[in-house]
Length: 295
Image (cartoon, rainbow, N blue to C red; front, top):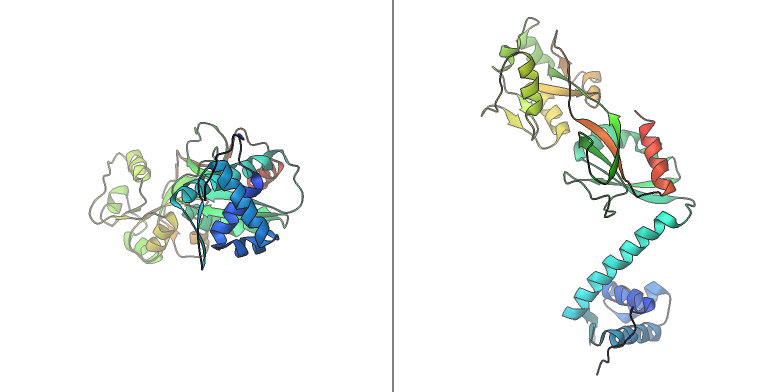
């Protein structure tokens, strides 16, 4: 078959939807069922798109169809472009009924603070697709709609609102706290394993207020997720710096106890509720206000 490239500036939209449906289904029949049209309509739409491009997009065989190398590249670009167009349109279309928004947070914060409050955020009219990742999602590129980030709040292109501040205070399992005794001092902690996440700045700051320096040692334990660190502390594996209020449930349950007479230190990093500066969607504003109200 000979393909003649069209001079039209944009591809036919119905051809793009047929292309993606056929790529997903692996056959024109499956695409027709998914789109609610006939097999012949799918075939004509694909043929029109191939004529516009001037190249074959599918290899036809008895078991169905598969994308050609050119078809694979074009389908990937078409899917990304249509997705971006759909996300952009959401900003301007009036908000009606139940809508899905993507909320991004690091896994430990999601498990310790966010998930117990998720039903209050959704309120039955918004569905939250919770994204948990250590990599910050790009709100400007709409990888997520709302994010809770941990840091100092100076992210370019984002509106960052202070959600939670933290106080740092040493804690341990009841057995380890009893071993330390009520008269413990900061140097006594260095005789036990210290638990920390990927950032040891909090322990360094805490020991700094006591006039001591701290550098990670072989007996100390590092955990990627803060809630895993709390479990390790409850198991008696070392002393932890509690980040209050998000670690409060560990105290309430009795799994951990504050070391007697310990002084709390302000954490220089905070949790911020972030949205893209250019995002004016009503649903995003509503979710943001509901989260801020839970402080």
